[in-house]
Image: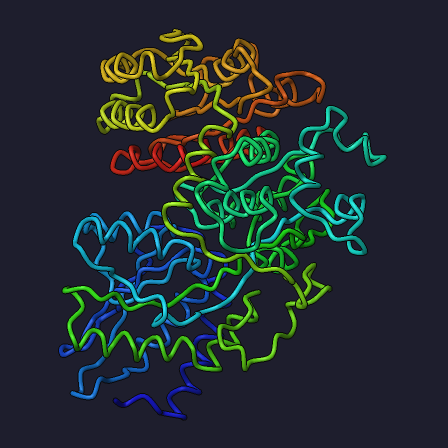
Length: 568
């Protein structure tokens, strides 16, 4: 194999440095990139990986593709990238929608799940864990505002999930620690059905409940004590999400009133120090390494033992993997806040206290449990998590006739309703220049089919009273403090008919201005549908409403609704 080219490696590493800098601002999902103008005899392989390391992988891969590495037979290796969540990547491989020559989830936690599902379907395991190589390392941590962490005893005292559970369930909130001005404890983590960090979080909670570091069994996690511990922490969750990057960005942009803390990767804490200067009211963020133990996200680089991976592709995947593990490329990962997968490379800045993290931690690492145990934890979590009290606000104004937007809206709304749990409560409000309530606080399990049928028959008419309709949705919601209270707004245009609120600022002042009002506990998520939607206004509403903004088109609106379901 033609793998050792010192001059080429130096050139490729320099190119990777420049590309990493330009890639850091990108957070988009989907297929990241295909080789640009690949040579005629190129051997193209697919690399399925996760979004946490997107900037590093994209930059390194562009440099790799430009360097024209060759197999022993002289074929030039080119790499096509596909980015998704760790748990989603398992689904895509098992259902055949993705056939990578190299796969890198965020951690080994999902490897037993993939192998178990593959055995059930095909009779053999797909991935040999022992043959996978660590790509980069980043432990799961609790990211918290520094003054908040100091109130809990950081950095002198070890803090863990038991402390979070106690704070989450205290009726006094931060007042128990002499900080009544901070209000209640608000927590966030990603959805375990889609994201590795969310799955790691709930498995870590199960470990913390049992006091174990390894050997976690199904019988351990199905006890009342484990369920109660998970419920305590989950009771403080403001909402879920699909990526740790979202929580890092949102906490920086919105400050401490958004979340007190979130479960993220250490690399997210490190990267916050380049963004914190842009925050108008935030404090520095620091990493808490749970004293009960945590997971090291090792981003394994695995070549599947699959029929679709030919001998040439296996060789090519090995060449590309070696490139990612080379010292120059590993050092670039370090600059992005990852610990090198190559343990011979010293951990240095920015993995240091000046960036809110401790290179000597974590002291206690958790072992990966069996697929059956992880599934059992997922079941317990679904029973103990905060259920949802949700209002869907759907624009049916006359402009929805344009580009057949109404058809996409029907499909997207139906897909969203299909994703909700049977125990969730749902209100559906249609709006043009007025509001029409289709369902009012109805249990999804009782009326799911009827709801899907009815949103499939909505017709466009009238003007757009966006601001007034959001106010009605929030004010009339039957709020439940034990549930996640949220409004999901989909609109394709600008407000033309509101009478109470003429501007988004006035609307949000009214809804969020009084912290004691139950209206302030409602998160608002917005979808700008089509080119006529006012993106700036919808982003403002989502930011001040402590939700998220999504951009939708006729082609992707159904997927946008599905992506939004990860927050619940």
